[in-house]
Image (tube, rainbow, N blue to C red; front, side, top):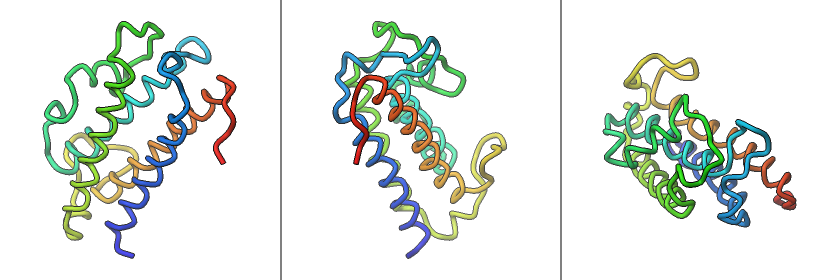
Length: 165
């Protein structure tokens, strides 16, 4: 298996788990916070889209983030943002999900297009504590998604949903 194939597999696997977790969460529950200040599902999903654009599109491929997500997403879901339980402050869950899906599809296309030599090159932007080059950055996207999927899984259980099998 080639490194690019492994990266694609990890991105698809973590996304598959996240999508499975979202499948039976009603839109009315997307803004439920298990405790004050704890991220709700809408924030988790928007954050994953925003982060994937920053890490893959911008840091690895030099793309402008706002060409791939609405400008408000950075403010609402980006690094340093805080969730609010007021749904009127956010796009509708269907819009958040549409962006989440579109960004991931674009990211997979970009990763499929990268040359093996390019994977070892440094990423753009400030130094990051979790990676120094493109292969590490792309791998981190999958790890980051799994971390947030775990939080969505906990929210599901608090909402009374059965664990995924």
